[in-house]
Image (cartoon, rainbow, N blue to C red; front, side, top):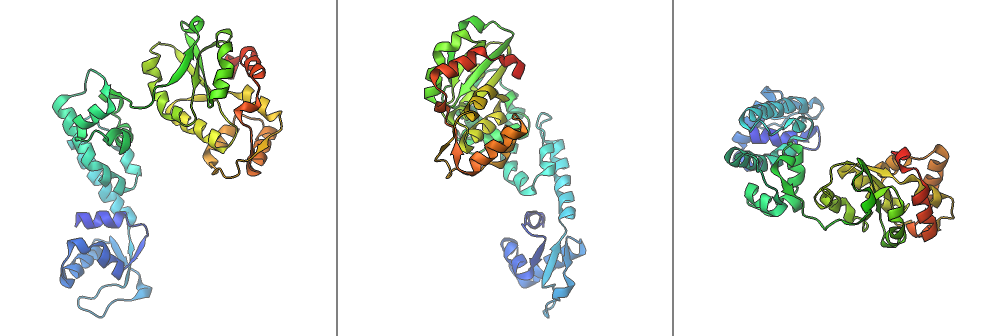
Length: 340
């Protein structure tokens, strides 16, 4: 019966026909009598309520032709199950996030959570870092689980990812270092999307207040930024700025990056772009509303309207619209700490 209730809880609609009910619980019943008894029990528990306008069958026992599912009542059952597992799981495993999620997510994650629980109870938390595939195999017996099958997201959801000392597997982060600034308490780091911009800015790095210039390589930086703390293990207040193409894809790269690492928009570069003539050719790119709205917060209303209009017309600004001398001048002469 609990499995049937879980299926009803995750059913996409709030009403269900008798035929749909029969299909939904087919794996758990074998005769009409069993089916009818199950439905009538769910009726008596008020999990299912008859839609009176649809009537009932003429068979004995009689069932409604359509039911309304009481999702709130089923959610209470889901919450009771979560409370029970709270008492069973290791105290470090936090499952509070599942109270506000679809019960199906909990059901899909439960088997892996139990393996994580068993690992922690057996071995405690590790003292040394190891690569993600190795730790993944130790925990669930599948070396691809952490990186390719949602394991990292699950461990973050239950609050134990950082405690399991996992070295992320991604391409190395590519950057150049300014040795004059690596002892600073506050260190600035500029991420640029394209190779041309990276090469143009590189000669000016030692003349700026930045500690590194990072080559984002398009979307690659979204994953490779995880390597920063390992590749640049200096204790400081690290502040990141990002400059990419001013198009929908470039905004999405920045927005995705902010989900992993707080990153300021390198505003002076973008403002210099807006002073130039936009080019056409990106009308095929998919719109990312959340990314656009988050990005526009850094601009004045008039500039926001201009960016909206340009993107709607399929226009954009490639980073390369700024020549090397202009790039370097902006980087050298801006008071970047005032923009933090």
